[in-house]
Length: 361
Image 1 (cartoon, rainbow, N blue to C red):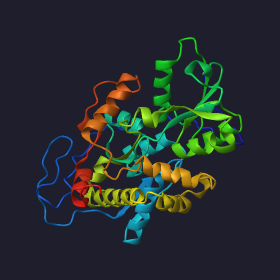
Image 2 (cartoon, helix red, strand yellow; image 1 turned 90 degrees about the vertical axis):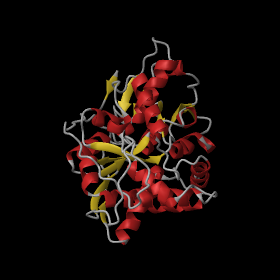
Image 3 (tube, rainbow, N blue to C red; image 1 turned 135 degrees about the vertical axis):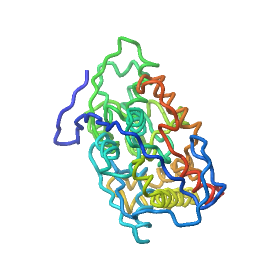
């Protein structure tokens, strides 16, 4: 049973239908000044160019449910804005609407909803994955009494949205671990932090939580009440849950803007990982998402993100990773079989930036 409704204490999400404009994506010009830059995922070597790449320096990076995982990209946009760019960063309640907006050109860049990107690309939408915002950080967290899958029988199971990557992971976990007779109620609540609050308030019994929200819910005085039921980040480290997606027609016209955003985001990721104490990440979290952090746990959480290298300083997205991610969702029934890497992603920009910045130290 699945229900959706509005509750005064939490943000219950209305399921949005993913509307995809079936149009052919324009070919993305190769964003490099070097004649030996890395090839695209389709294997086409880029031609050399000695002139600055075009870009309007004005675009929109749309976010949904901003948390710690978003802070590197937020900082990157501010750095670029101070350098003469004009980048808006709206927060949109429904992730599916963001993907629709990317396909229709209302927004130019977004991140996080990998499965929606794949579905839209497979239907012919003008969207390609161009990088990775964060490696898999997801956990399945719930009441301490839930020790195994069948313990969710009769419980309330909360997800982000119907097409969220975290939702797909949970449903695949249920399919693999629960008896066919196990029944539960599914509800949809946008935002990991909002679902964490609902769990702590007794409104739901189990849900997918980002690492920081899982720490805030399952440690300290709450450790006896809640637990991490399954650690998806440990079980599925190669699964790319938070890819960066962009409108392919916009990329074709503004390769310089794409390069600039990926470059600065990668620089921020490396700065985060270069501070093993987690202090730099903590400073970004306090700056950008102060309402999403718990002062009692932020030091431990920030250090954990750094230790797990969740912010990918090496790009965190290779052809083999995208192949794995596509197959994972195909095998789980969340994605129709047949999607290819060149249709889903354009790694040209990321490969150029990684060559420019050099290997992670």
